[in-house]
Image 1: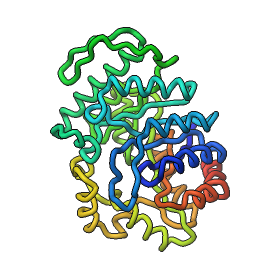
Image 2: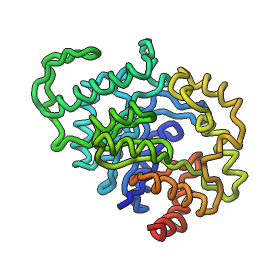
Image 3: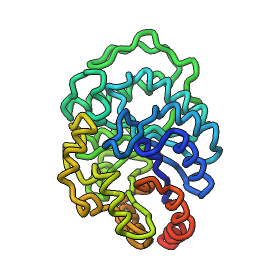
Image 4: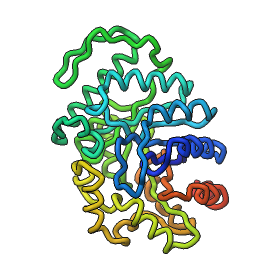
Length: 320
């Protein structure tokens, strides 16, 4: 069975708006929401980046049914995994089991802020594995002493551990990350409709939900939508390793000057028509994803909610 969700884009919306949009998503029948965990937006036109754990507390108090996950947190540098163990345990209790925890190796954009050296990809994967080990150990409620290659924890005990350990959904873009996700995770978080990566995940023993974001931009006309995407979300057109290694939003803005409107929108359905969105969903379903969530680029979230209710949700029911 496929679950459909909605993106709470922390880079584009103020904290009060994120809370309001989470409640609206619940009212409109979405199965889950995914909220991003950034210290900076990708480009200054996005304009926001609130502290996700405060926002999650407010969402827990204002929703009743909808599942909520962080998509995704990097637990390796900016915040110590022991602190994240406490944050996620408390968040899970507030949501009464509706919370899931997405993790990944992050981007320099957010993780360099304390002056630490940005590690190589293979090192970040090793750090992620150890960080998840620390978090799971603390979730047990036992006193933890840990002296590993990257982290040290001394006499640490969560007096409010989660009632049940939240699922940890691990992001992975390449074969090494996919195999790590299969080994340590309760689900997989991908970024493109590539069947090969999901086949590798399954072959390595991966289990649980398979999550991916579908970028869209609803507007009254396609030209307006394309302009919004090019202005607000040009980072979607920046290729390869740059998205992990560029350290500031100003660098992303410089790189974005080379991204044309066509490049920024090539994988983002733009405008009022539902069929291009359904086709994007179909590609992800064919690749094997079963948790798809929609990121409406730009400020017009109310317009997207109307589009979801009137056109997209009925079309997806027909898709089966």
